[in-house]
Length: 202
Image (cartoon, rainbow, N blue to C red):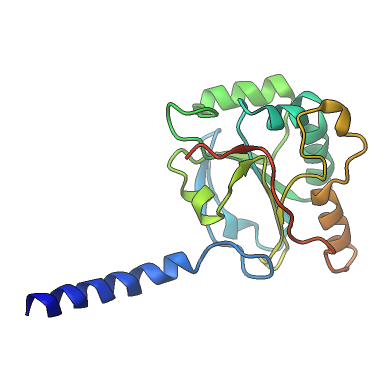
């Protein structure tokens, strides 16, 4: 009887867990729904932006790979360009407390002001819930979601996996290419790339 009860419990656990395991973000499929608190205190839900392109940018201000794109002004230019064209841009911070990249809301607001960053919002994810949902591995790692809510890009910001600011001008920016192609009604030619950067500090 004990073995039977244990077996039933294990089966139930697997069945309950399976939907969670199968909901990970995959290109070509619906982007997993999430909600999070922005650094300005607002509650953000992905579903509120259905009908728009959405970019997710994983961030860690202590990472030199992230620093490459912010200190060169590259990330800010991308944010300004694409939000200016109606794209929603979320910077997501999944570093756990006491780990590199963890910041409070006020610290993130100060950082954005200092760096002249202009995302739609910066989402604080100290539990890593959103990060794990999208299986974000590095900072930066970029995702693009189309107006139908389908994930159309997952991977690196560009094709220069270095910390050298001088590599930015000559790089192919995968995020911009994906948005340009999708907005023109074309198939995204490179929907998945290998992300580079610092590991997300869950």
